[in-house]
Amino acid sequence: MVPTPITVRVPAKVNLHLSVGDTRADGYHELATVFQALSMVDEVTVRSAEDSGIDVHGEGAGSVPTGPGNLAWKAVRVLAERCGRDPDAPGVQVSIHKGIPVAGGMAGGSADAAATLFGLNALWRLEIGRNELADVAAQLGSDVPFALQGGTALGTGRGERLVPVLARHTYHWVIALDQHGLETPDVYRELDRLRRGSTNNGMGNVEPMLEALASGDPRELALLLGNDLQAATVSLRPGLRRTLRAGVDAGALAGVVSGSGPTCAFLCESADSAVRVAAELSGAGVCRTVRVAQGPVHGARFVGDDRAD
Ligand code: ATP
Image (cartoon, rainbow, N blue to C red):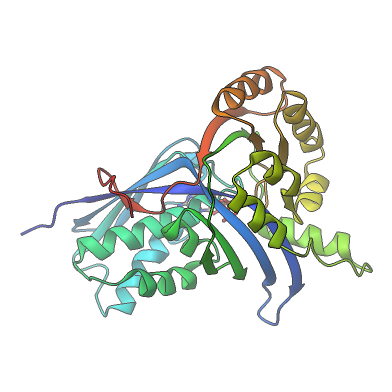
């Protein structure tokens, strides 16, 4: 019997704190980051098919590879290898509906990889537990384990070693999307260039942010938002300075570049304030489009499964 297709919803992330340390022997930078999962989602359907393939729909779909360059494709291969399956007999068709901006620093590709692992675990009846699935996820990329887990979490190592963080509040965000994406490796290269000859490595201590999250006061959190990659992103895209200023002028508590950018995330005092900030920002002509989002939300889960964890 052909198994029923499985659809998984998976969130985007924003980095509330991203501190970038030295480059390691394996070429990655040492990170300390606080992720929050946002209510901007991709939906990924996995189904058995004679021939394997990927189709991508929704915003920015045209710039997403549908072959081996797609992280979801890698997820199929890596999971198949892990459980000794032939990924092409029968094959798997992966259908991705993008709601997460492509190349926007919100880990959309990582989210699709996480959703694919989560979906295939059910489609192939593998019964792999969350921890083991997180191990496979870490093989695929630094942000993939967080997309599985969701919520708010502290990430160390390359960002893949996660500890959940208590966040006592729903936070209200306005997300400003830029005209064109940025490639993450280009942003790290720019950071290395800017830091050459300097001894200043990283934003440092994450503790105050963890305390702010536990307090649940968005004004306290706003004071602590920060991203070491922001200087590099703004250096590559100087117009973002104007975007960041416009969000705060529109009434946001604070703004930060999300991950490697160029998406900017603005923390707002309340849901009403976020709607007002979004309306004003979209009229300011500083970005392609504006969305309102909340966080934290759950990590990858089946569509229709709204049970609390
Ligand atoms: P990062 O996780 O590095 O912050 P990002 O959020 O900035 O990434 P993504 O949307 O993940 O950006 O896309 C980064 C690159 O990965 C793009 O150039 C895109 O073509 C490629 N890519 C591969 N698979 C996917 C996918 N499933 N969805 C989106 N982009 C993908």
